[in-house]
Length: 286
Image (tube, rainbow, N blue to C red; front, side, top):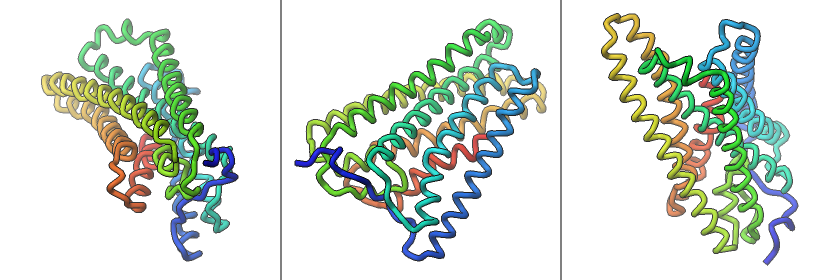
């Protein structure tokens, strides 16, 4: 049984067999990445330079833009390189680093989205206590906790997955190093069960955060509907609904990717789902 480190490289799923279609994928990824880099870069510049934007909401938005840039820069450049140069390989070390960074930024982004939900709840339902509950120190602590959660989540998953022996080939069937696809080529039953148990625990935590988000938005919408001004209601809804849509899309696709039964083999579906949580949110969040 060969050890996982004996594999010199992994093979990604090719987007297409024809060079013209691969070039089309390259330009598509280039457009998405440039849009995400420009939009998130503008947010970072605006929040950093304009003192009027030094509010808790904009502080969390700045952190969210950082995670979006991290997600895009971790997965898309390698996919663009593979499409342009007609290759599908990545080294073992590069795959481990990519898997760690993807999980790190995704875990941090999810924590930040939950924190931003709390920010909206306090702003709308407890406006008189906003400055007290979300002071500069409290915001710094919540942001640090979000980044630390993402780091711990990524470290546990990556260390456990890449410690497993891999003996069922090196084809991942994905355009980046995703933990579920690496587990498919593992030949350690106990390690696989350990990783599944860890994934289920994380899924339960994500579900709990989603329940917290839904409960918070129920309270928010009840408060918004009591606003007498139609303009005030419209402003509140326009602030909250995009966040709720992003959270729902992010959680549903991520849970499907990590908890999908093995009896549903569909490379095209896996590709679409992974795009929906790793590439689309960074481009749409701004």
